[in-house]
Length: 94
Image (tube, rainbow, N blue to C red; front, side, top):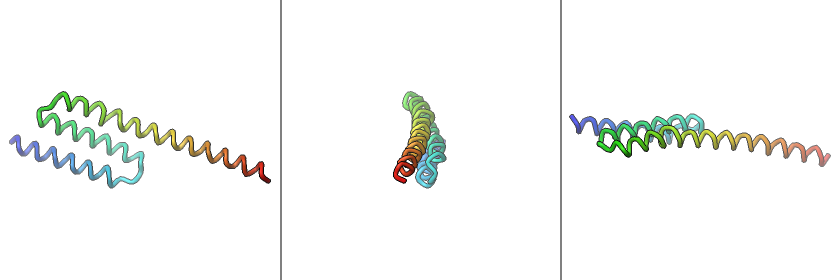
């Protein structure tokens, strides 16, 4: 029974890792990354490593995807600000 649970957890983690790579939209990729962190946390619980699982649930499921989403928002805001700045220079040259 334990071997089947470990095998299922490893397969779930492998499927989620593949899904993270295959998703192209960065915002959706952050959501799938959160699911991957959850799958790894479950794997660690199954492997009887509760301290590592707790860290994985906190970091891999919540903090890392949050940082990715915040970085994406900051990059989009910076890109929009940069375009406005470039448009202002184009008007000055005319």
